[in-house]
Length: 102
Length: 312
Image (cartoon, rainbow over all chains, first blue to last red; front, top):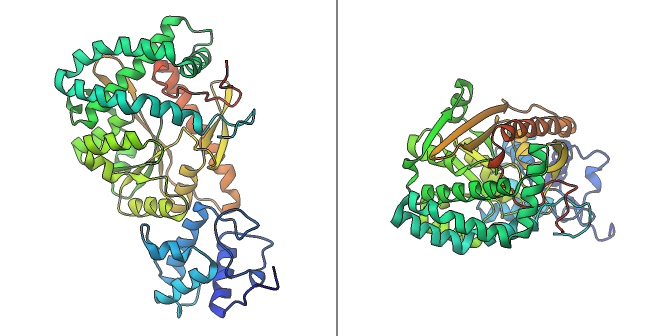
């Protein structure tokens, strides 16, 4: 799998760092994350996060980038697909220039 | 539901029970109750209760198991009958409330200033509701006083027939439901939005749905599983947690109890589990205390304790 792993952009690396920090995923190297792996669902096939984690991510994005993820929004569902999708969402919603504070 | 022995009795058992009772019979009862009144319909409850008592083996066993725990001795047949009847009487009043006829009930509200401020303050709080008593009455309060703005989290897919009935009888309430069936981010974000709009968000705190995260607490001398989600949501969102119960006291009388369990959970992620465990246990103790004063108000008619098997 590592061979197929897509390279991360700078923004994705920033975001990966933020998630690892917020979710306290000790032992997880942000640099070794596959940006296209699914965030939710069974671990092993991706991050294995749950809905409470999703809430923490949403709050962190709001705090750090001023980006608000709304329920009942197709864009939100897409954004939570993978790290890459989440980074794209942040960029599209004007959060790219703000540096994360955490 | 996985059938592994020793598994939590959660999941499928109560779903099957709930749908069995709710769909057709509730629709019929609602029809009768709104046309012929509460008094007449209550007289009909006895044959209905007898029918369920005779045919509902799982519910009957669950009732006996529970009554044995709360009474400290094997229950007499008429105590099981009374337990069933109390459930039926409360279900009828639920229906009447849904039909907008809740004004005939006497609801005594016991609200401390502390809790009043929380539920009226418009800052949002998590309200733990349960099948101890009749939580529908709380909603009735919300509608009459317009002070308690309450939205309830329910899994629409769990009782599609019940939801349809709800949509017919009380479309406004049906529309305010936050659907717990939407897994993943959707539901938690909806809860978060409702809280930030100042709603009190009612979450079922006494039943675990299949695969969801749960924790063990002690209740009436045994171990039961409670869902973790209400606590985790409150801790992530830093909102107060209030336990709400509405006990049926016979006749037309209901009595609400509110208890502030925490003004907000401040815990790092790593400490969260321990704090949530302590709070959930405190909640179970509140439940136990109320059950001892109102033993027939327990409406979980399925194997509830971890060591209680569904069989025999």
